[in-house]
Image 1 (spheres, rainbow over the protein chains, first blue to last red):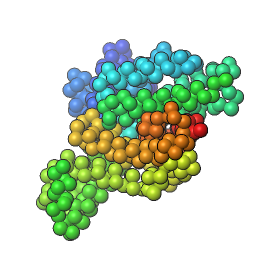
Image 2: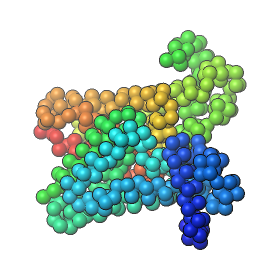
Image 3: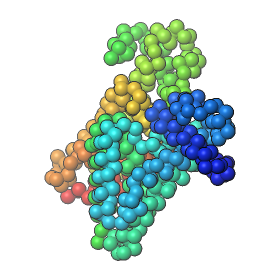
Image 4: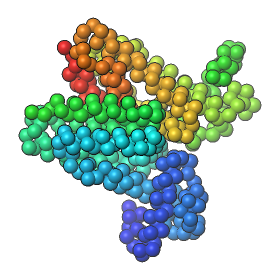
Length: 205
Length: 205
């Protein structure tokens, strides 16, 4: 966790510069992929010198790790306050609607910023894979928290497994975001999220 | 459809060489991504000269289109004869088991060869996106055919929508394959496929 430690030691100005580099890298990698983004591209986009960039990130690999953490924060943050309170069918429906609206607003571009990095890096960069799995786990646990609350309040049948339902829902969402990007329509995402919400509803008492 | 036309005009030996190039390119692109695979890499892997490669594919873009068609054939072909007969819960369950077993055998590497190309190319290469969407549609229709048969035989409730269920199931599968690759375990794929099959089962009469 070199990156986190070095971040903590930075001055306010240093943190701002580092953040600007990470945001620039995240934007470029989201558009063109990691392989399609050079350190020089990031340097130009962030308007920093190569020695400045090197001061914060000794190699592209470190920058990629920072981008994964950044995108996890962005993606999960963008779903708040909904994501932390998915403890009713109404809340799940509102969250579903918001995710779908976001894809429509984006004209079906980009897919999931975490999912796209995952598809590119999971088999090639062990450290990136670990960070991406951690990001997905954080997301899954946020969903799970809401479903567990429903279960604990006795609103779900005792035989329901909130953790497994949460994992299935996040997984379905990932498929939906990928298919949206390929199809350039919302049908697949709607179909899979509606099927999953109906499945969850089937466990209500 | 330049590629298809030129393929038709080839001699037997020409077709073999072309196939060898496409298979080599597909293998490399599956491992390293499209951006991580140069035409020179393909040339070496397929053991052809650069002029031979150029004879079949004038640019990398054409090679990528051929790889998409190749992977669609491979992925759908590997699911046969199951995929063409998904017209019972038993058949769906057998198909689910086979897909899961394949990921276990592969040690959770690679994800879906079509899905990985899709994630990388969908927003960058319009022609690739179209070919990938067509590949997914072919897959979706194969699933749909089975569910429609169940519906037509009156085994599913009249209000079931076999086409939407098929789309949701393929979408869920895509999410599951991506999550398998990131997590290096089978839990997410199992959870999402089981949820979807249970959802389909809820429509049985």
